[in-house]
Amino acid sequence: MPTLFSRIINKEIPATIVYQDEQVTAFKDINPAAPIHILIVPNVEIASTNDVQPDQEQMLGHLFTVAKQVAQEQGIAATGYRLIINNGSDAGQEVFHLHMHLVGGRKLGPMLMKKD
Ligand code: 5GP
Image (cartoon, rainbow, N blue to C red; front, side, top):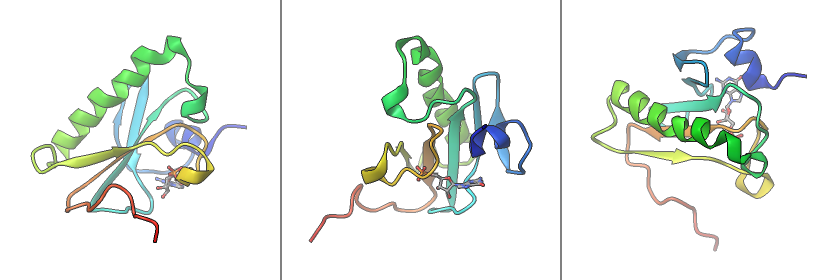
């Protein structure tokens, strides 16, 4: 069964795709947490960071060059942005198809909420 993100990558479900090549697809998050919120996703299904393999290092590194390019295109390269990868339950990962969140367009505040 393809993941939700594979269905977006294959254009079976609509999304605003801002970048796509043979390795990676980037599209707008449906529920943005900031003015710019884009998901950068490997085209191959990798459930989470726990599942990455050494032979995927080049492709995973490519996520960063795509993030840089998309940040420039979205006009937030100079003002700053945050890249987030959630892994597993404690991080709140909802979609088990590895993805990098690119968020920016406002002051993002502290990286983590401190527990009382
Ligand atoms: P996670 O919590 O797994 O790191 O992030 C999953 C992200 O996927 C969330 O920010 C959520 O808003 C986004 N998302 C969930 N379903 C869809 C969808 O159908 N389309 C798009 N574009 N984003 C989605």
